[in-house]
Amino acid sequence: MRLIVTAALWIAWAAGMTAAETPGGLARVVPEYTGAEAAGGGVRLDLELTQGVPWRVFTLADPDRLVLDFREVDWTGVDPALFAAEGLGAVRFGAVRDGWTRFVADLDRPLAVEEAGLSVSALTGQASLRVFLAPVSEAEFDARAGAPEDPRFDLPEPAPVEPARESARDGPLRIVLDPGHGGIDPGAEAGGVTEAHLMLTFARELREVLVRAGFEVVLTREDDVFVSLERRVARAHRARADLFISLHADSLAAGVAHGATVYTLSESASDAASAALAERHNRADLLAGLDLGGTDDVVADVLMDLARLDTQPRAEALARAMVDGIARATGHVNSRPLRSAGFSVLKAADIPSVLLEAGFLSTPEDLERLTDPDWRARLARGVRDGVRAWAAADAAEAALRRR
Image (tube, rainbow, N blue to C red; front, side, top):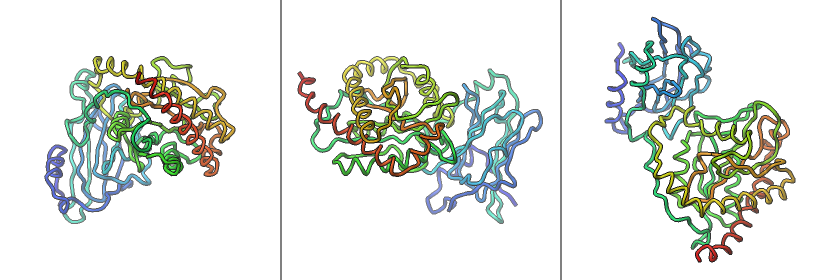
C-alpha cells in the first residue's frame, strides 16, 4: 500500500511536523528507478527515494527551468544522464542551503507541471516522486512560472545602506571571506577538482593565517552548500564586516590565462575576458534555480552609488595591496593582475570588496599550484600581507577622510 501526497499537501504536512515526527536520516536517490522520458507529448520524471521527505516543485522563466526542492536528499552516485529526455536540457542537483537540496533542469521548450505527486510505501517507507510536464504556450508558461512564497527560501530583506565604515574600529579588523560557488553550483571543474571545494579549503586555510595575524574572520559558507549572491553580501552586512574578499579559481573555455588576479567593482569591465568572467559568476543564482524577478530597485541603486564614492577608492587600494603581497609571497601573478568588472557579489556599498581569482583551473600550471597545500600557504601569506599593509595605510588616512 502506498500513500499518495501532492506537492502542496506534502509541504503543508511537513511544515506542521515536530522534529521527532520528521523522517529521520538522509534520504538517498535509488538510481535504478530514477529517470525521465518523453510521455504524452511532454516529459515524465520519476525519482525513487529511500524515504519520504518534504518537497516542492515549480517552474521558472528566463531561462525556462524546472525546480524540485527536498529536505534533504543525498544525490551521491546519481548520473545526470539518467534525466536525458526530449524537452529537458542540462540537469544539476546538490545542496542549495542548509538542510535542503535542489534539482534543476533546463527546459528546451515551454513545459508546465500538470501533475506532481509523491507516494510512500506503508511497508518499506520508500518513496516515489512522479512529475509530469505538459506542453503549453510560452505565454501560459510565463504566467504559471515563479517560486512559491516561502519564508524558508525567500531572499533576505535588503540591508540598509550605511555610512562607509572606517577600518580604525575598536578591536580587530573584521574580514568576511567568501568561498565561491558550493552545493548545487560546483563552479569550474578540472582533473576531478571543483572550484567550490578548492576555494572552501583555501578559505579555511586563509582564515587561520588571518586569525593568527590578529584579524577577525567570518566565512559566508562553512560547508558544501549553495549561497546566493545576495545572501553572501547580506551575511557580510550582518557580520558588520570591514572587508569582503570573494575567493574564486575559474576556467577559460578558450585561450590561456594564469596567475592570481584581483578584481574590483566596475559597471564597465576592464577587458572582454573580465566581462565574460563576471557574466559567468553572476549567472550562479540562475543556475541554482533562484527566482530573480522583481529584485531591481532604482532608488536603492542610486543611494548605493553615492555610498560607493567613499568605499570604492578603498577597495581599489586594497586590491593593489593584495596584488603586491601575493607577488612578493608567491612570485607569480597574472600579467594584468588588477582588473574590474560588474561582479554582483562586490556590490556592498559600505564595505570595501574585492574578488580574488587565485588562478585558473583550465591552466595545468595553475591547477598544479592551487592543489599544492604549500603553494596555497604562500598565497594565504601574500593575502595576509596585503591586507595588513592596506589596514595600516587606511587607518592613517581615516582622519583625512573624516575631515
